[in-house]
Length: 93
Ligand SMILES: [Zn+2]
Image (tube, rainbow, N blue to C red; front, side, top):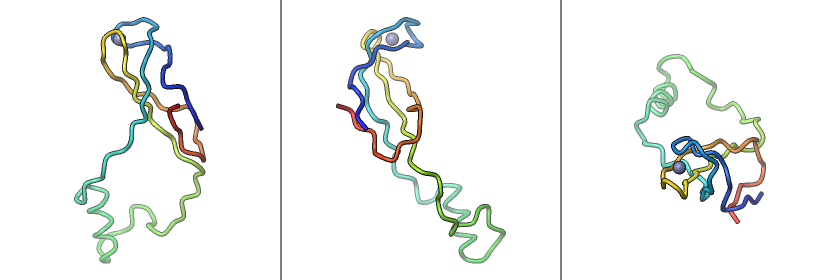
């Protein structure tokens, strides 16, 4: 799915409709010792109950993407969730 690289939307800092540069906000690499990862390791070893079944298949179709919008007026950035789940990856034209 393709979206335009410039969108005219409201800027929460200027409180006006202005042109925004669009980028896709990619998730950074998860640290190996994050809370969820530590819990997962413990459960795998056999300690504690399972917070969620690790082998359960992911039945949600598609992924939701975060858009990073940069205001051309004040150069500040804010995020917006792309409205729906999409099977195809979202690309900026
Ligand atoms: Zn602004």
